Length: 130
Image (cartoon, rainbow, N blue to C red; front, side, top):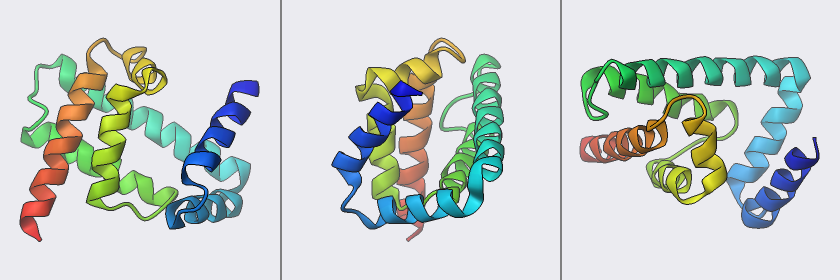
């Protein structure tokens, strides 16, 4: 619980002035503890599916991985309205912040690198469609 408070304060300092932060605070409050627990469980399940995809030798830029990454992107809407720039930033944070990397690596070795590549490819492909 102490770690969560530290992360919350760090996030507040970094993004507290943004619209995404405000949206996130409002949405989490509205969903309540049970709703948050459900969203987090769905996120964990999706991470496991992406790890399985990686273990099966799928390419992070391939159709199978990209369909899962699209779900990952859409899942952010539970907290805030994402955009491609934010998603690229999240991909970079996954590899730059050892805490983020560790969360993925405990699911499967190499998952953070796979996620990073898949997320950036997703953002690039979505940008081309605009």
